[in-house]
Length: 168
Image (cartoon, rainbow, N blue to C red):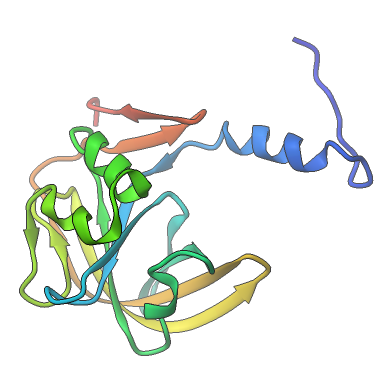
């Protein structure tokens, strides 16, 4: 297949960018906030570590997402890193089920911030900064607690599909 270049002034730039990002594999997470009375959760791939001093991470959330307005400065959220056996849960929290039905699937600790039992890791954060950028907000979270699972077997999203990596 021949390479194609898409200068910034061409009509196909957006499509080319989307196709390029399909080649960027990402770990799949479920971001949660709220409590047992009003839990929110969404599947996300735009999550990355930011700093170890202080421990912090960032995630990007569409401003139209139901969870977005609950992620204001000082609020809390949890990033649950999914394992290879969580593909169905990723789909459910990615919109396959209604908001009020999502936490009926999987095993959740709802005593405080919703945390997925059996996640590879769950990272609890306080929102430290929110940066609006067009359709999304960059949410910077300062880490408050980390819960580690027993194994490393990430669920990866790439080329529009979920993949399991069991070699780690």
